[in-house]
Length: 227
Image (cartoon, rainbow, N blue to C red; front, side):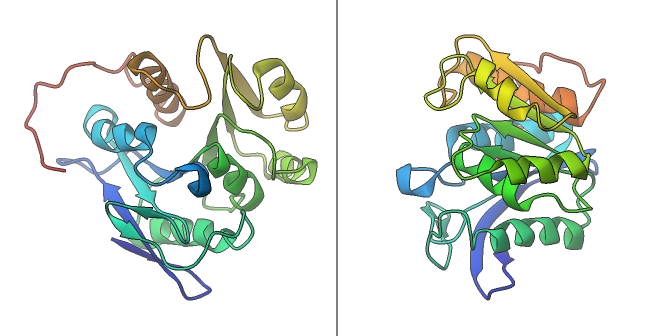
């Protein structure tokens, strides 16, 4: 599928949907830094797209921000450090509105958290989940905007993160009264390993679909699709 930005670019992406029912909610995902290997297939998002439509009845949108390549293809444009990417964020939110995707939540990982904080406070958004936020590009002004926005902000911070660890994250996000900072013992910035991925997916489902049975199953007995 394609997303179209207000500044005239075409972005490539994929939308995973539940097979037999309407989604209970939707995840709009924003990948890590493309200049350091981040793209729509970064492993947490790929696994979210494979698992969550079937296990939690969620729609999952993944796409390459401007100038980013993956096996799906290359999005038009060039990397702009988080500035012109505001059009990419807007395109994802608009696509959710046009497609009628219910209850959209923004999910950012690393650089993707900066895009969410800087550009994601839009009325149709239900809330946001941040994975490993470095808070390099996002400023206190961006945090204050989210505080005023008032929508839920869930912040998953690895105990052993390379950039921002739980205690400092709690201090920085104290500007956002509704922010819930969750330190994850033993985890690192890239969430490598099945225990880390499972924790992330469980936390996403717990906040986006309250009351859904957790932990999510680790085995699937239903039909198998094709990638």
